[in-house]
Length: 289
Length: 345
Image (cartoon, rainbow over all chains, first blue to last red):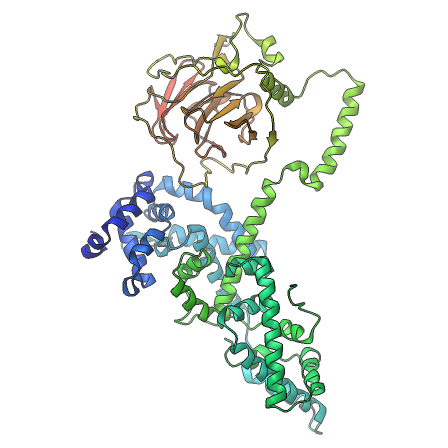
């Protein structure tokens, strides 16, 4: 029985017909009904049914990948064999690149592979995560996103995050009880800088904040940042430099105009924040998650 | 404008040295894998992209995921780019290789050569459109026609008729200019085609009405009863926009209409003796020991599982899926699913 409501199929009949033609479902014995159902599920998940643009959504579906995913989910051997030989090497290579480690990468890829095959059986049917693929992207990119999702969960499970306030308190209390004013003064300057940096970062446009985060926090290369942001390397470089100068100007204006610091004091703020104290400035920024 | 130096200016150092905040748990605003993949592939509408970016700008978790996806994609590109670099441009391989070549040349110069490199012979034979000397010596007494003008030998069962006219022989002595060596991606295994949307011009579908032109020929049989196939064959699709020349040791060379040639990676080392090309992007080639290879994009070859290990002498194809092959002993097999299953005729 078709999942897609009849009104959906009727309203977007032409787009669905184009989709089925592009999908080439006959190659893997995937019927048009299955493809239409997947299109409906995807449109619903993407919010296209509510926000509009369903036809454009359907026309943008990666149809052949969707057809293959549906066939593999059904457990057909021919498409699964094709899937293995075509995608498995790239999946394992991606897992290695994401995890940065051969063994961990293999483990990550193995787990995804098993989930795509569908080891869990419910109501007589294998449940595969391929059911979550609706063709909005290529199948390979989707698998990379799933790998990345698993990897970030793994990172979280391996790391303990120190409570936010502890860092600042530790910084402020680095002096002994005899009242070492220089350390508390340092912490005060650093806190001022942190606050100014926070405000300056929040004033940036989202894409500028993303670019800065990828460059400084995630250590991506200009090429990789360009890949994420869909920009040329030189554009990334130019915009990073411009944003950095913008940040510096905003920070110094706030410290000078708001906190009444002199240029020498501002310089001290930078030096202390960059040098001695291992303050987790990112934890001092309230909006950083 | 150069990017900021992460280590020079104090601000750069601060931005760089802020300890990496760990990604938090997923929130309802976080993008799921499909949205993130669609964003990476630029497969989303502008409005949704802006909405996602407003979240990504402040979400460490999503930033980490996007960064990981970008790393994986760049890594895949680097591997692909490296595999496309001709071997002689990779200095780590080229320098020892050159040294080895120099040693071999010295050895050869001292001693009388016993055997020429088969590949060199093949390429020379291709250039001259002649049969290699070794084959001339090994052949049965009856002279064989030139390889480029060879007509297909009908299979014993003869349900497969080669209906296409013989391809015109290429002019003798025609120079194969611009013969470029390209190291294609290696075929990791059977049916290892990653390419999508392979188009094959489907004909009427009946095996026997092949639109392919086959240039394989069978010589007289030897003492073991096996028919020895001609080594060189030229294969043309109906529109003759491209041709493939096949020969010993898995040699496959593609020639385009503008004259550019390209040695392609067949993935096999057995002798290839005949082929059939129903369209410019689809070509089937058969050879000794049950070797069958196929391309569906005109460039990448995949090994197809054969129903026999006998030497194959002829092939006809009407599509990427419908094919008939003939063995040296006259047996015929057909497939209608691209070689997944075969039927004996």
